[in-house]
Length: 383
Ligand code: FE2
Image (cartoon, rainbow, N blue to C red; front, side, top):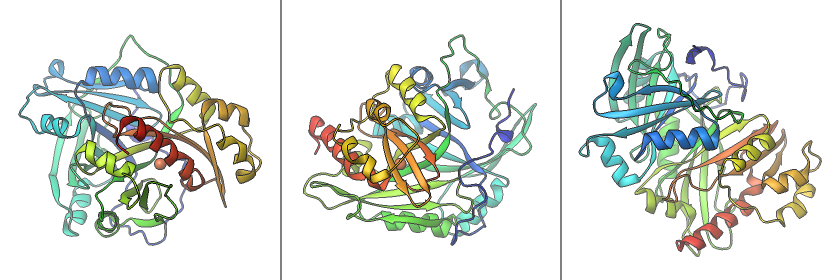
């Protein structure tokens, strides 16, 4: 069985070290993302069928876990853990009642979870869980955790002395239902939506408490339409493997998509997970076939895109047919597309991104993208 620790060679930033980042919290990459959901069995089926995730690990009644069930699914280096509680009075149930299905844990892979905890808590992080060890016949892991925006937490996972499939307590999960992989490789970035006035607070948190640097800032002039606006600061760790843009709503004529998120999520939380692919045309054709819904890009977008981005390798007609957007920066270009929210509350969604040299976030697409989101808000009556 493949071991998580030897598959995390990230392609994205190479060895580039971001200026301004500090090295007191070395992070190897994202370890996993855990969602608290109303029905983990069905959610796992959805992520397997629609997104091409593979059955990976399981914890539940059959493995001696009496209070919840978790399915871990995996694709490339991405691991999603889907957890449903049994006890209506549990903290997990309360999270689902308040937020709906959503991301609770953004787990970070570190070499020393005790040091990660001490370094961040001594700089002002609020402790979520003190360092503890869990072990089984495959060795031990050390886990600790701190709070971030809203009810979201970061767990630090130290797995250098562990060779099991995922984590102690989980058993390998194989299923007779195995829809094919759709080429998703790793998490490129994860975006947090925070309250009005919270962007600087939380970007400072990542800078001061976690040693991250501010890669780029977008103000309301960059990200606004006729009606709505938002501001964003992209925070990165030193090796660039972790990127957390932090969004806050800005004043506009109508309700911004960030306010809509905050209303429906019941406060700050993770807005989207951007996942990388090497072949976005193949990935998106597959996802569309399997029922994933994407934001609609107006056909007129493709009338001017060529002038903006110049020559690209992909067939523009194919991109138009699939609704894939393109943007260029000094270093190259990128292709990206956004799903509609993956639950009934207009909260968490996914971005699929293919980078061809570009290290940016698709600024040239912001306007078309936000107009498309507004059209959805209009339909929901929440604009
Ligand atoms: Fe994004």
